[in-house]
Length: 503
Image 1 (tube, rainbow, N blue to C red):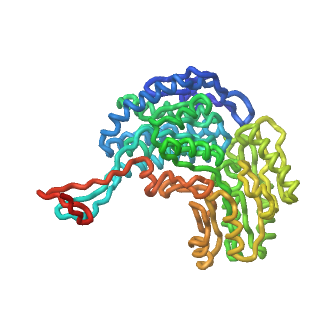
Image 2 (image 1 turned 45 degrees about the vertical axis):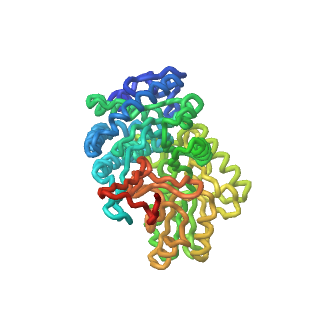
Image 3 (image 1 turned 90 degrees about the vertical axis):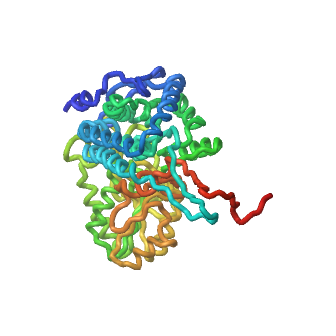
């Protein structure tokens, strides 16, 4: 098998520049992109330094003055062309995502489809950036609100969705009239470079270079500059809770905005009246899809005692049939972890599990072959174990038993993270309890579907240590704009609010 087909289509060379505004830049140190499939080098990247950063920011500031005045529906037309460009390169880009970070090709292409979907969504949104009209207490006055472009949006993305999360932000921000500077994960720089080249196919002929810029570089060299830059009114960051705290604090100190989508410790509650086949399929994809490296991956499984043994037996059988291997092979269900650090975190977690008396029901081993492969693992656990309260970015599923729904919800909500959750039941009282004020405390709460695989039409994000931000659909667009309240006096008088007389 060769990788050259999709690398050539996407313009990936042996050495690539990692920065772009209206030209390619890269005056910093070189970065190696290594495939987790077998640990070999894919290509090198010349990273950005502080000088490159300043060039990019200046171009962004200049082009924003023009882009913000382009009518929103016309900005939407540009985004429509971007969607079509992503369609053109869907297979090649999906393969690159798989090759660079390890998810199977179906998931890689699914991620590109997500980029297409959010772009299509944003096209419609470009004609629906609505404000409200309010009745004034003063006669012959009109009061309303409108939404204006915010400015330069800093987008910081993680390796696990190296294209989709950027698109969630960039497509919405673009129709809102913002410009973007994108700092991707240093683990997946080639995907970002390929996407930037696809963007350039659309933007350069239209004269919109600089609306979407790229900034590959270390946190030390360019990330800190982006977070602290007063020219960046919004930083949207996806990553760990630790990273989010640092970014959130830095941005808050300069009274700017942060949109944070951080860690998840997602759980499924399974009631005795659930459909076992639905449960099995949901848990399997949620726990082992992307090798457990989704922020919405299922980490905890609460099983009612009456069905626990049966579900566990089915899970062990299913886990034993999973094909682990090259993510570009059509029969592979689980590819590698992203790098050797991720493998170490997996191994470290298992050592802690053993010390805390967790029972490994299946898996628990590093696979000895080229690349970064581990066995999806099932662990019988209890809530007294500290490890279950943490997010380990690997395919480890903790299984608990419960007797009553309130007990399960309390245990479910007892962790610091609050991204995605699910219940499997046919009982409406259980459903309503789970979705009520006293139910799941997560930003996403599902019924009879798993924790993973959110649609772009709904707002995506979570509560507590997950950060509280919202991306993608619903009214998430408001994060990328500034609200302005306007009052117009069309009378010959100047009445004051609250009936105040002055002079």
